[in-house]
Amino acid sequence: MRALIQRVSEARVKVEGAVTGEIATGLCVFLGVRHDDTAADVEKLVGKVTRLRVFPDQDGKMNLSVLDVGGDLLIVSQFTLYGDTRRGNRPSYSEAAEPVKAKQLYDAFVDASKKLCRRVATGVFQAHMEVSLTNSGPVTVMCYSNE
Image 1 (cartoon, one colour):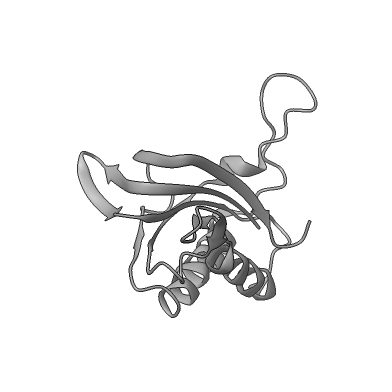
Image 2 (cartoon, rainbow, N blue to C red):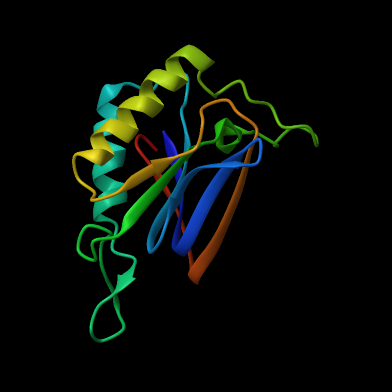
């Protein structure tokens, strides 16, 4: 699994013009599922994302996690994180999981996150989504479960 994480002061996702999820201070997590990912990858990546120290402490040093600051999560499925552009200009998505498996693991990631974070919002799996956010910092980090 891959997660592209952005520290945000606000973020929202819309599907067909309707807001399906929005958060204030926290992390916007774009989540990609690989074809060979398992439940163990979910647990590992949820732990990494929620404990990632990207929020400033009292000295201004990035030393606090989303859990430490009581922040929110917005989790958006994004198979394009597995786009491979090494051969040409059209990405190959052969490493991405098939939709049924990807949805199962995406849902498991959301459920595990809800057990840890005070507020978890989501997009809609496989929908065309419009995501807007204010990246605070800016801070953008890639996290991996198995790489």
